[in-house]
Image (cartoon, rainbow, N blue to C red; front, side, top):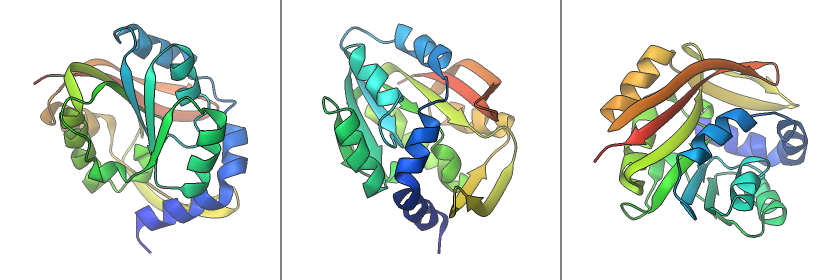
Length: 200
């Protein structure tokens, strides 16, 4: 079974349990930085939106038009209940097919780390197309080069990530200018956080 199928099956199985845990993570500072860079009534894409809480929900409360995508049906069902004012779609983030210049901003929390790292560049190229010129995205990535399939919350889960230097190189080559990049600990987990602006 490939990484994508492992992740899809895993999150369908643990959707409610994961939602209860992840909703407690405090990513308010990173999200606040991102939101300050957005225009009023901005359209925002949430990649790997999960159950929609707290990210999509917070964005909607701030008056943004949110579209969330995820591959797990169970997560999307929760998201639609938790954030009824947002739009949620079942999509693979490595196959973004939105029209060019569809969004003012994009976020991805704890999601790209589950995509095989050789596909990360494709995600960022898709974002470059989907975002408007000067559009901004906030992304959570791995803090070191690592790939594994391990037990997680009672199911099997897959992770794949690059070291920060490699990740930044991929993002720049996709057409973005780095605005913020820092390793941070949130909820006892260490990740590499990046805010970048689209340049067309």
